[in-house]
Image (cartoon, rainbow, N blue to C red; front, side, top):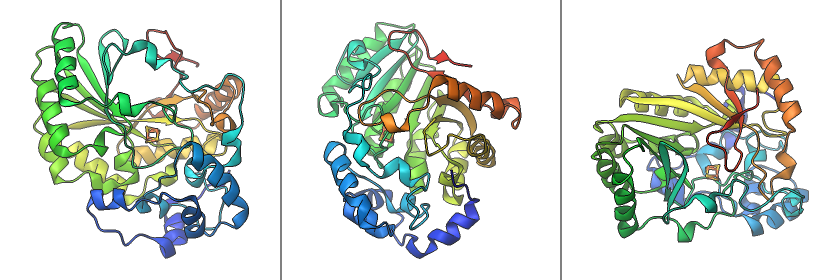
Length: 345
Ligand code: SF4
């Protein structure tokens, strides 16, 4: 594992640093979607291209320039690159690694609604992401059938009204913040108008990969919501948290948002005590509390990222010696059918 401080990475990456406009939609549209371009922009030799194209055929490449600029040029072991560069192992069929590892299809009472846990539901708000993470457990998810239309949203609101014990709605995806602010604002207003809903939670990677997503339009609907607002970011490595991410987090906090982070433990990305300790410290710089450290969900195409539970527990045991308790993420596995996530340590 290669670890570097953020200023070093900035210096390394400055020659490919983006000149992209600050409008997040323009940045999203301009994301790299071609494995050849990704390899070329990062100075990777052609040996990587064949695997990249094979993986791309299964799950498309998508990397915004704001994220690309944090990747060390010419380094195939860069921990950010490994999250976004397809490799030939993705085509391997590995026993136990399946298309729907969390069996979410079993818990969908309505299109776009996942109801696994008693008091909270998850709303698939958007099928789009700003970045395609190679280990994503929803890399095979049928978004086209499950992104709620206006009518479907009405049905979901009806479902919630009939179940007042549900007090929290989680906007998920894809990335919910890939939706327009108009749509998100209307949705959030309708949800927060339900008397039973106490919290709106947003699971998103967009403030990390395109920090300019946290703009005045977004804050315009988010800040005035009369219920608790929680944003759970998804950051796996300290190198992902540049100064623009820190500033985006600050804008969210100023809008009254509680910020948490969840990570996935990934071989070759953050599977060392040093990397995990640096991540927690850097999260603290951004005033984001570590929440979960997930072991990998066994999704087809991602087996090369897997770390055994035993190895994961050993890492976390050692990590405790380096961090204050409040900077320790909870090591968990999501087991289909369980009433909550299962702590491993
Ligand atoms: S849903 Fe999250 S983890 Fe999956 S590809 Fe999108 S941003 Fe990455």
